[in-house]
Image (cartoon, rainbow, N blue to C red; front, side):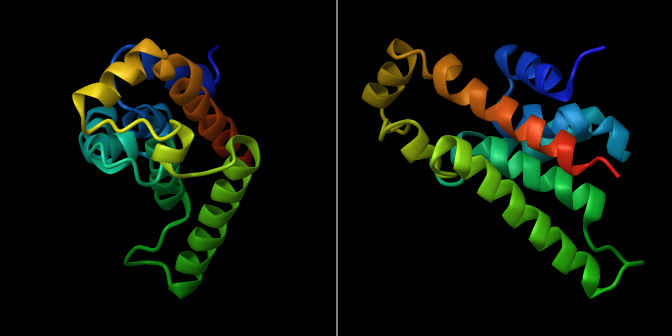
Length: 148
């Protein structure tokens, strides 16, 4: 059986973005249809619509935490606080490994809104050397955090 890190990595390398890949890997066990997960997370890839803000793998992870711990109509404010605490933990652990949660910093300043930046991304194989490890990291952290 594949780990969630392997599942997310395979989805990512098959052409889906970082946020989609992370959310998709965890969606079935959290009651979310996988196709719906792909749609929900689509705009969060590459640091939110290629703006290179918070890493898409991290935002995908935050969506997973929301599905598991988040507040809905049946839960009180304590669910919000628990989700915030878990979000901070995810981000701290990710930063400890990758030194930042910000996509443009993770990519070394490569500007993906430009042709030059996209060429730099491709030529440097950042998809495999930077982004895929980020997807794997988030999925691994989530696997540990979701153990009850």
